[in-house]
Structure formats: C-alpha cells, structure tokens
Length: 634
Ligand SMILES: Nc1nc2c(ncn2[C@@H]2O[C@H](COP(=O)(O)OP(=O)(O)OP(=O)(O)O)[C@@H](O)[C@H]2O)c(=O)[nH]1
Ligand SMILES: [Mg+2]
Image (cartoon, rainbow, N blue to C red; front, side, top):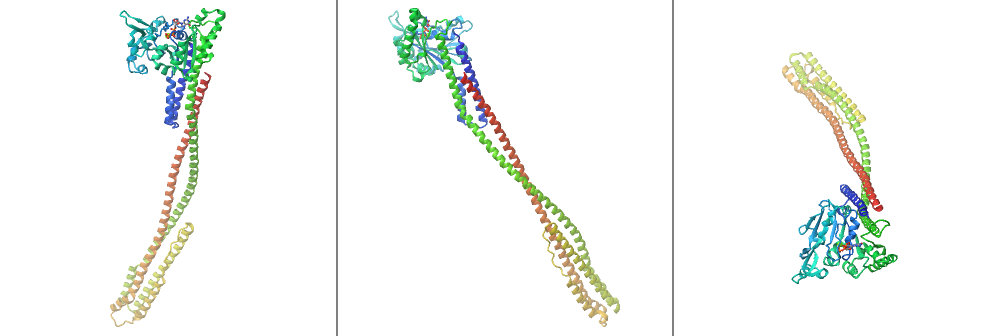
C-alpha cells in the first residue's frame, strides 16, 4: 500500500488551494483599486482566501478499544518506513487520543496533556490553544527504528484511587483495576489526556490531520472530542473487529456515544479489521460467505451502505489483487479529497461569481457613461469651433473697419487742422483791429481823397477775408460730406451731424457797417471837427463794429470746427471699444475651448482605463474559470 495514495491528491489539492488563494488575493486587490468591490464582499473574499490557505482535512478513526484503529493508521500511513510507529495495544482503554498533524514551522515533537488537567475548570479546547500545561517530547527522525520508542508514552498509565478518578470525571470501573498492598482499590487510567504529534509526513504536510481516538470509556469522559473533532472530520473510519463481528459494545458506541447526525453519517466508512484472524478460524470454502454475512449484518445494524463496509486486515502484505484495504484507502482518498476540492470550488465560484458579473456590469455602464459624455463634449467642441470661426471672421472684419475708419479719420483730422488754421488766420480779430487802427490813422494824417481810399480798401480787404473764410467753410462742409459718406458707406458708421453754419450774416453786417461809413465819413463831410475826433468817432461807429464781426466769426468758427472733430473722434473710439469687446469675447471662448479639450482628454483617458479594466477583469474571470475547471477534473 503506497502512502502516496493520500499524499499525491492532497498535494494536488494543496497546490490548487494555494493558486486559488492567490487568484482571490489578486482579484480582491484589483477590484478594490478599481472600486468594484464593497467592503463586505472584500472581507468575504479575504476570509475564503485564509480558509483556503489554512484549511486542513481530517480523517478520524473511531471504534471500541482494541478493534485495530492504531494498527490501521500504521498500515495506511506508515507502511513504507519499515516500522509501525504508533503503539498498538491490548484493548483495555489505556491509550490516549492522538492527533497527527504537521506544522513545518516547529520541530517534530509529541506534545502530551496530563490526565490531571481534567480536574481543571478549563475545557480541552482551551488547553489545545495554550502551551503551559503540556509536556513536549522531541521526536528524533534520524533513525526510523527509534520512532516506536518516541510514541511509547502514549500508553503510559497512572494508578489512582477511585475517588481521584471520579474527581476527574472518569468512571473507575471502565478501566482495569487492582488492589494495592494497603488494600486500596486503584483504577489504572491513561496518564495523558490528549496528545498532538507534529510530523513532517507527506500527507500531513499537505494538510491532512489524522485522529486516532480512544474507545468508549475515554470518549464518554471527553464529550468535546466528539463535539469538536468527530463532528468536523471529513471522514470517519469506524473500526470493527471482523473476528468478533459487530457486538453490543460497538453498537453502544455507535448509537449512544457517537450519535451522529445524518450529515455526519455520510462521511462514515466502516473498517472491519483483523480479516486474517477470521480467515484463520474458518474453513476456506466458507470464509468468504461468513465475511459477507458479517459485513451485511454490520451494514444493516449501523444503517450504512454495504459498499462502505470494507473487510480488511492491518496485517495484509498488499501484494497481488487489490485488497479491501486498498479499496477503502482509495475510496476515502477519492471521496474526501474530491469532496473537499468540490466544496472549495463551489465556495470560490460563489464568492467570485457575483463579483465578476457585477464588475462586468459596472464597467460596461461606466464605459457607456464616459462614451456619452465624450460624444457630448465633442459636439460642444465642434459647435465652439464653428462659433470661433464666425467670431474671428467678424473680428477680422471689425478690425479692418476700425483701421480703415481710423485712416480716414486721420486724413480728415490733418486736413481739418489745416483748414482750421487758415480760418483762424482769416478771421483773426487782432488783424482786424490792426486794420481798423491803420484806417483810423488815415483820418489823422490824410486828406479827403486818401481817407476815402483808405476806407474803400479797408472794406475791400475785410470783404475779401470774409469771402475767403466763407469759401473755406464751404470746403470744410464738403470735406465733412465726403467723410460722412465714407464712414457710412464703407464702414457703416453713423454719420456725424454737421451743424449748419450760416455765413451770410457776416457779409450782411459788414455791408451795413460800410453803408454807415460811406454815408457818414466819406467825402469830408466832417470838415469842421478835429481830425482825431472824427477818427475816434469812425472807430466807434464803424471800426469796432467790423472788429466785432471778425471776433464773433472767429469764435463761432472755432466752436463749429471743434464740434466736428469731437463727434468723429467719438465715433472712432466707439468703434475701438466694440472691437476690444469682441476680441475679449474671443479670448474667453478660446479659454472655454481649452478647458473643454482638457475635459475631453480626461474623459477619454477614463474611458480607455475602463476598457483596460474590462480586459483585466476578463483575465481574472478566465483565471477563476481555469481553476474551477481543474477542480472539476481533479
Ligand atoms: N492479526 C491481526 N491483528 C490486528 C489487526 N489489527 C489490529 N491487530 C492487533 O489488535 C490489537 C489491537 O489493535 P490496536 O490497533 O491497538 O487497537 P486500537 O483500536 O487502536 O485500540 P485502543 O488504542 O485501545 O483504542 C493489537 O495487538 C494489534 O496488533 C489485524 O488486522 N490482524
Ligand atoms: Mg490505539
């Protein structure tokens, strides 16, 4: 019988558990980063992950004392080392329960919990979690021949008074008794309450725990063993003695002590051991029929399927045809390990299935949201682009218009300045006063002809100046008409209003002054008066009046001319304000467009990330599916 029967599939299962745990770890990490998992689901994944890493599989051997449980373990798990390490006993309820497991972080050892700890208020479970009360013996693996010696303490006993045994919750009469030299009756009880062996055995290293449980006496005294260990075992091997058949003690253990639930019964295998002894007792012709009879009887009394009852021997050589021992080992290994693998796969499937499906859904809807906003943003961007084109075209036109109008205005301004200068010279009041003074002087120094001549030339000069000025004003009006036409036609500007400027009254006033002068001062009609008196009188009646005409004309022309430039200047600056406003609007639109482009880039990056996550999710799903596939094939 090869111990690899258990260790090989266990090793495969352990590997699978490791890979599944890693896949869960990766999935949990990834989905947390991608914000696809809620804390509850993440916690459940972490829990399953821990369970996969730590989980052990256990096979418990139960049966009345002496039925051959320990012998079976020796044969099934240690047949390759040349010795039977665990002590096989006489069936007197003296061995202590043994748990075989492997913790590679600790040295091989046998840890023993003294029987007197039963006097403590602590439960066995609590002692199992601590170190203090235990006796730890090292197990030397350098020579296998010394191994049985290392396990001998399992059979240590103590002789204690009945009262002491009863005080520990033991029933003294369940154990061998004798009377000492003082006549005191003593019960021989196991020295140890519980033992844990730490061994680097291949099957144990791959997560198997073996429980070699004691007979009914010790089990009754330690109900926790049943509650915690037997009930949780993945396989329960009920060991019976084929030579004895199923007896009342076995039935009592089965129905009263074990009292398994229907669920726990599904994990029961019946090992009818010591087949060799029966074979020796019976006629070879009849032995097979007798075995079948006993196996059937046991199956029906226990209420388990006949196929789960194996008639075998711990003394079998294992050569030749497949024996029941091998068949049982194979059946246990297959069903236990496969069942556990299937349970793991189901758990992995249950914990990841919803997460994967929901993540797929969430990622798809995130993608849709991003793509929708990409479409919206692109639409707005296109609209913006068109708007910007229109605006920039308009701004171009506006700026052409402004530049053209400015040029026209500057040309006008130059011409206007020249004309204004000329008008000022023509209407200059000082010149007018000088002319008046010169003429007055003629009254003092000249004779009658000279005075008349001076008066004629005075008026001729004044009229010439006025006429010239009037001509200039007409020029200015003409220029204004041209400018206005250019402004309104070429640059669609509002024409400047040109205030009417009447010049006829100046000529009229001058005519009246001349009439007075001709009438009163020509031809020497003031012959009797002093010359100065006549000159002053002329200035007062005529000269000052003419000067006044020039003064008024001078002032009014100034006002009129200035008004023209002021209005035009206003129009131009209005145009400039308009242009600046438009350029500012364009700048704002440009900024908004930049922002929009940035946002679009962000959303696009998000969409790409989601697409990437979607394929990462597929990888995770594939990885889980591969694991589940492999679990199904195992
Ligand atoms: N001939 C023969 N002897 C066996 C077989 N199985 C067990 N024995 C012997 O039967 C006796 C009892 O076997 P154990 O394995 O110690 O029985 P156990 O069920 O462990 O008993 P406890 O530890 O007291 O509960 C031992 O002397 C074994 O060597 C077998 O298949 N054939
Ligand atoms: Mg035993």
